[in-house]
Amino acid sequence: MKAPMMQAAAMAAAKIIAASMRCFVLRYSERSTVQEARLSFTMLLANSKQSPTAVGEVDPMIVDVHTHLPSHRGTVPEDEMLTETTMRSGQTVQLTNSIANYYGDMSPVDKTFIFGIAPRPWRSEEFVTKQAGWEEGLNHNDIASLTAKANPDKTIPFMSLHPLDPNWEDEYDRCVGDLGCKGIKLGPNYQDFDPLSPEAFRMFARLEHDGIPIIFHQGTSPMTEAPLTYAHPLTTEKVAMAFPKLKMVLAHLAHPWQVDCISAVRKHPNMWCDVSAQFYRPYSFWEAMLKFHEWGSTQYILFASDWPVTRPQDNIDALRGLNKFAKDHHLPGIPEDEIEGIINRDALDILGVD
View 1 (cartoon, rainbow, N blue to C red):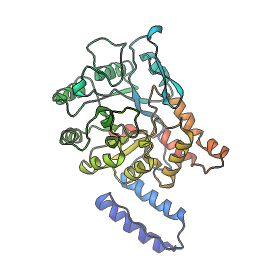
View 2 (view 1 turned 120 degrees about the vertical axis):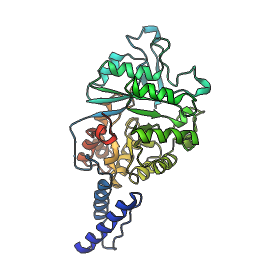
View 3 (view 1 turned 90 degrees about the vertical axis):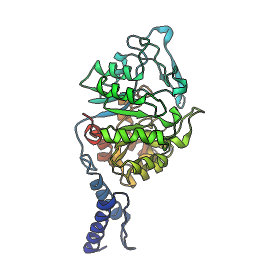
View 4 (view 1 turned 45 degrees about the vertical axis):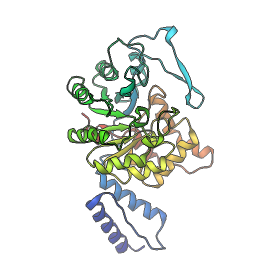
């Protein structure tokens, strides 16, 4: 394609993005190459989000945006040690751990977000995940705050609420005002609430008004009582459309719907995704990352571990090992600068968390 034609196409697409930031139209002649289309597409979408960490730019900060609560405040008694083998496709996961274990595993990163998941109000006595080694009377938000206070320069607590809880606004005020929570984790499938319900939209309106970002669990779940459609990126996209100033992260690249995740995050300036819980399914991990690359969308991926299911260093090593996996299996590689961009992306700046 001749240079004037490419310049005109790029200017037209930029005007469309500035008008709605939801559509992208770019037409090329039969002589245009896939590489030209991908480059122009990537540059325009990167500009549409105005991200300081777009393709080719790396900030010297590693932020783990997805870590769960330690099961115990102190050392785990030997008779309370628990492991399981389903989360990582047969590999053993240590479910019981202490604050000291948490910070030992977080040593490779500069900042972390930590959170629990609020229980269903009709089963308020149950933790979604068990915290047996904490004092009675503490809920998941208390534990997130207490763990963060053990190293406040490193860890930022997020709250978790349930939109069907009649008292959620009181807990919201306590979390933001007293516990220092800067964001919220929601798992609509685990918590069994429709993210498109009036109750959920009422909560989202408050979060948008207050500038509180959401980390949404997205993707599959082994729990029979967790509706998959509640955690599908094409469902969550409707939340992004209804609340365009509400920043949100789609966890786990929405596996196994990574392609739908790409479709959502490249379209909406208020959506990102995280790379947690991916590398232990190596082919699926490589395939997803290649598709993000081919669609010019790796700049929308935030670093995350899903601790304690995996550790940050495991994820860093796996990301940096993607091209070895590709080479060993005669598959296309992924540019190293895009991989380093994921690892070093400043999620604090992107999500407005201080």
